[in-house]
Amino acid sequence: MVFKIGLIGCSRVSKKKFIPAINSLDFTTITSVGSRTDSKAKQWAKEIGCSDYGSYEDVISSDIDCVYISLPDGLHEEWAIKAANAGLHVLCEKTSTTSFESAKNMIDCAKRANTRIMECFSFRFHPQNNQVLELIKKNHIGNIHNFIGNFGYPKPDDQNIRLKKKLGGGILNDAGCYPICASRIIFNEEPIGVMSNLNIEPNLGIDVSSTVVLTFNKKNAIIEAGFGRNFKSNYEIWGSEGNIKVNRAYAVPNNFETKIEIEKNDETKIIKNIPIDQTALMIKAFYEDIMKITKCSFNFERELLSQARVMEAVRLSNSKKKFITLEEIN
Ligand SMILES: NC(=O)c1ccc[n+]([C@@H]2O[C@H](COP(=O)([O-])OP(=O)(O)OC[C@H]3O[C@@H](n4cnc5c(N)ncnc54)[C@H](OP(=O)(O)O)[C@@H]3O)[C@@H](O)[C@H]2O)c1
Image (cartoon, rainbow, N blue to C red):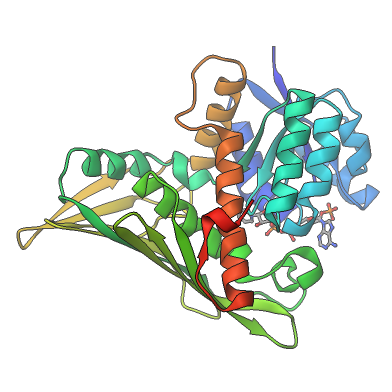
């Protein structure tokens, strides 16, 4: 049985990452394409080689098992709920949504419909992620005290969804979410509280840079994200006996050889990874968990909610200009 996927939105990320990943996998295929523009859906369906196309509603009512939602962040909730209510699984692009309340709505609907939903943080499926976790588990750098993560790039063009307040734009939703997620994975716990500063561009009403300090139990994560920067997508972990650096941590192109640097006793060891498609690994893990073939190392829905809770604390800390504990976010 083939796992049939419908596209909600003909997006850049779909063209660049999702469709090539699906084409490399033998258990799944795209059978339906949805766009706000009929001619665009038709053209994409032709290129993909599927017969069903139309509006987002048409995709949801077509014969599929799952949707891939790659709309602007502010529209994820609406379409994830519509898809779940129609009995469909959901692969939802990051950031899953723009508030903790709407993340809870999405998860509640999926639970009621007995369907699954995952936020598409594909970086966590790259082998380097598990290698870093293994190094920490095997005590290679001693006790870990601090995570520093950065993600930034040149400012997108004026029409880009990332600069539109109404669509859930801003650097926190687009890039800051990655190192926040990575620090939670590395420390394998949730932060106690958050202090943040989002620099809002007055003309746009969106954050163009964000600085976030997450306080964990005896550890902290310092995160910086920004538009208008030279490209950087990294993190560094500081331990009592060494440091780990991952220079290409979040957006890893399929043809990119990654390197983990382990600094210890004035020496640097390097672990290289051959190029790999992290989006394909993510889709495979989602499918295998749903089909009860292999259980994924984390629970998709719990993770989506936990991440959304931290993101909400970051927003609240910025608006109230004070330290927010995670207990305050319910
Ligand atoms: N996981 C990753 O590596 C990764 C990378 C990049 C982006 N993303 C995420 O993927 C999503 C899409 O990002 P993208 O860069 O691919 O964006 P994009 O190219 O602008 O695509 C977004 C799509 O949403 C649809 N849409 C619906 N309402 C819209 C509106 N009012 N304005 C503009 N578009 C609208 C459009 O599709 P139709 O015209 O066909 O309806 C558009 O093509 C975002 O959530 C982003 O955070 C993830």
